[in-house]
Length: 87
Image (cartoon, rainbow, N blue to C red):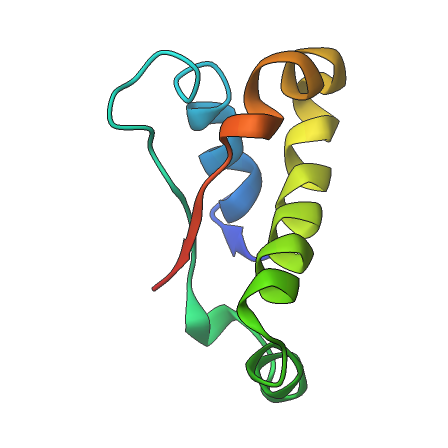
């Protein structure tokens, strides 16, 4: 997920905008992953997963992006609230 949008990474920028908003905004905002940013092979692998496993895989991948910003804050305040959507 290192898609670039100008000089800043697209998903890194989204995480920076959401990290301090997720714990306080209602409804809780989702982290959006664009389907066209994923390779064909990744799409196939994600499609083959059951819902519970897909949720775990996506949250782990997204968590790595948030942890690069502020690991402690993410683990204490955001991780349990993290929601995602593929658009």
